[in-house]
Image (cartoon, rainbow over all chains, first blue to last red; front, side, top):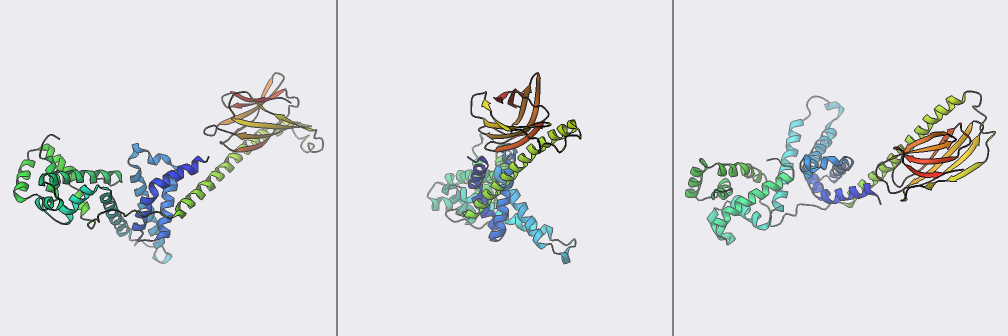
Length: 168
Length: 219
């Protein structure tokens, strides 16, 4: 019985799929860099289990923030060459680009976790620009249902995003 | 929420209410704290939604990680674990060396290099458990030397939590002497050496740091 390996396995099974998908997205599909970053994040969580203590915020939030920082650091390290060692490191653009990619990935991921009914009403009303009445006809439900469902869909989305570490 | 209008907040924010309803909700909003809160809590979402394209019927953006990720992690865990065991063993050796330092100082200079010449026979002492439960197994090899006794301890651990500190003590007449002190982890085996100027031990004990006797044995 090896508790250390067991703990690592549990961490991996619970978080690696989301972290791997996110890391691929943030590195524009660079599997080697994505793998380095995911392994480092999970290793840190394994060595310091207290970071995933629910009283310190959502576990996924810590993992996502750490992954983001590692990927930005990786990128900066790869840019540092002796001949350009000046104060001209493109710090802000990199962080912004990664953050934009991070946020869009998280929103897509959150949308995918909504129930079909909740996602359907957001697609109709937001992405396709239908009014409540049009959406009601397309979805085959009363207009009042579309309104309340939109409200609960947005609340559900907000909860999922919070759980994933997106502060709102 | 008690106000029946608060569920309009979503459609209001996504700008899909018919114009008349939108105007009515807006007028209501200025005087209703509940609806203001409902709108406020969701106000950030349209901006977030606009960052991504329309989602497909299912999510499916999660990609299964390659097995090399888990394998690499388990390798790393094993590597760190053996590193940690090595550190524990080093700590045990240091504890013994610290003890030996004291013993050598007590001996003085005259017997420094005579031990190999005059070693007596080695006896093995099997330590017997005093408490119930199979916590550890241990045996001692005792070799009489001109300067006293050389002790080699072989110990295996089972089923305890954390890394408790153990003490090996020997009793000779009225004297109860601590001979070695070390810490260990479950599943580990430790071999360590100790030395003392006492030759005629009546019994040995392995104790916890708090003094509870776990094993006892005599020559």
